[in-house]
Length: 303
Image (cartoon, rainbow, N blue to C red; front, side, top):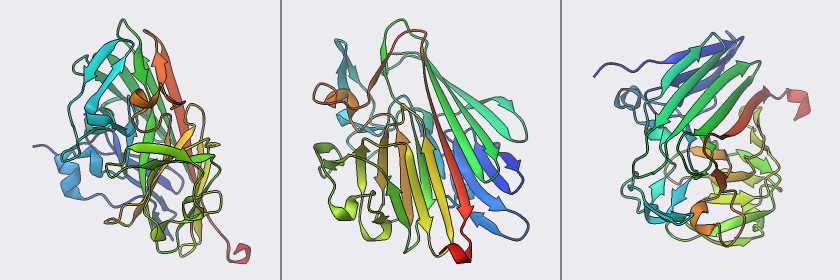
């Protein structure tokens, strides 16, 4: 098997490396000014790159839906759909198709890359195209997603990003939200409630001290990740329809996922109960989303 192509973008000290064949995922997002070399996302191994395993990238796109669909089964506008269970041993369908796909390069320059993925109708009975554009600027990375329905009927639609930031013992996450979805043992939503203090990002969550894999509703599109050990922080800025936030702190990996998403877990099955962010995308129309990740190093006298 040939080595997958890696594309590196750079603006001054800000660098991003993408592997189109591995789910259109990010291999590295880092700062290198010749004096300080600093990675923000979890390390990606050469074996991961060679195996084209998008789920082990530093970040990957969520399309055409975010997170889980219970047992891969749902009904939409009278049509019954049964998806493959694409993340064994999980009993649910996970994260859509983009993260497991081979994306094609549409355009590339020193500071911007656009990838494209086309999905023919199959178990997901809608034909669609999605474009993912990475743009780097001074201490920032912007990612835009554009999902176009190429089929002849409306389809359920959602977009999101799944970055895995490095988690240190003192890492904190802040965000303005309204409520949290409590989950069952299979991380499926059960109840929408006000978050307890330890899980409330409005107060700041010490993410190394709590296990999270939860959706938050009423997100204002602004989150901050602080690494006191590094004297650094990352600001996540997202535009509608990315109105929901997922925080994930796995017990077995030193990462924290701060995921801007347009829909909650199992949105297609919860939509009759509450507003889940699920969109109905008509034929020929497009759903677009954008998020910016801006980092900064905090001066000693501002601590």
